[in-house]
Amino acid sequence: MAREDQTTIGGHVIDRATKLQVDAHRKAERERLYALRRGMPQSNRAAETEQVIAALTDRLGDVAGKTIAFYWPIRGELDLRACMHALHRSGATVSLPVVVTRAAPVEFRTWAPGCAMTRGIWNIPVPAEGAPQRPDIVILPLVGIDADCYRLGNGGGYYDMTLASLPVAPLKIGVGQGFCRIDSIRPQPWDVRLDTAILGDGSIISAP
Ligand SMILES: Nc1nc2c(c(=O)[nH]1)N(C=O)[C@@H](CNc1ccc(C(=O)N[C@@H](CCC(=O)O)C(=O)O)cc1)CN2
Ligand SMILES: Nc1ncnc2c1ncn2[C@@H]1O[C@H](COP(=O)(O)OP(=O)(O)OP(=O)(O)O)[C@@H](O)[C@H]1O
Image 1: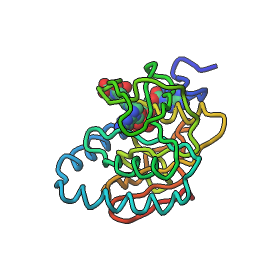
Image 2: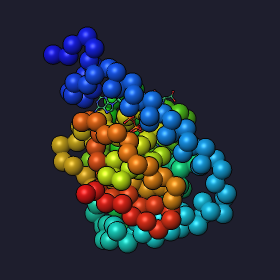
Image 3: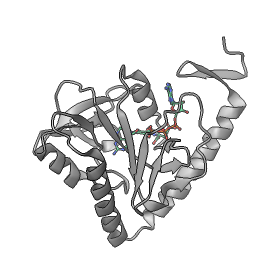
């Protein structure tokens, strides 16, 4: 049982004071990294995107028959839609996250070129219909990534909740700009470590 000065997140008890400190640290890092994104010239973004797609394609190898969750780019995230098209052509099932219920795991819906889309949370385009898929591989957009391969995201906790809810752990690959590296997100018991992160400066971070 949690005491009054404690709270429970994903079944883990944590001191409220610690939680406040961790949240403040992550918020500050997010703001710093969002500012770097805003300042990034378009030409650099294009070069980094190309670099990440090449490394990711290499890492994925044969994708025929696999289900791979991507993301529809928002707010200066790397635009990997060309890669989604290529993997679809190679026989993968490509899916996208859909926030069906706030503060709950996302559903992954199949995406295909030209499929009907609608707007979801934060106005993010999502496939309009389709049964939820269990991804073999999840590609996650990074706001930041730390030295131990823990991801900093947009602060909704959606990927952590989703990954905790899947009965079989998928391969988790983060993708982001070269400037995404941070020292530590100050990982907590509910944070899910990624297997690998591929950055636009050509560097790759792997879980220790
Ligand atoms: N392209 C893309 N799609 C994605 C994600 C993503 O990071 N990138 N997500 C990956 O998670 C999910 C959406 N993530 C979201 C994360 C936070 C909030 C949100 O409402 N944030 C609050 C601030 C955080 C809080 O304190 O709750 C806000 O903006 O008011 C909404 C969606 C699913 N789709
Ligand atoms: N497994 C979980 N169960 C319940 N709540 C969770 C879980 N994981 C995270 N949360 C909640 O979500 C909040 C935000 O988490 P965090 O700062 O790790 O977000 P994020 O990983 O940056 O966001 P996102 O995954 O949406 O991009 C946490 O403070 C916590 O309250």
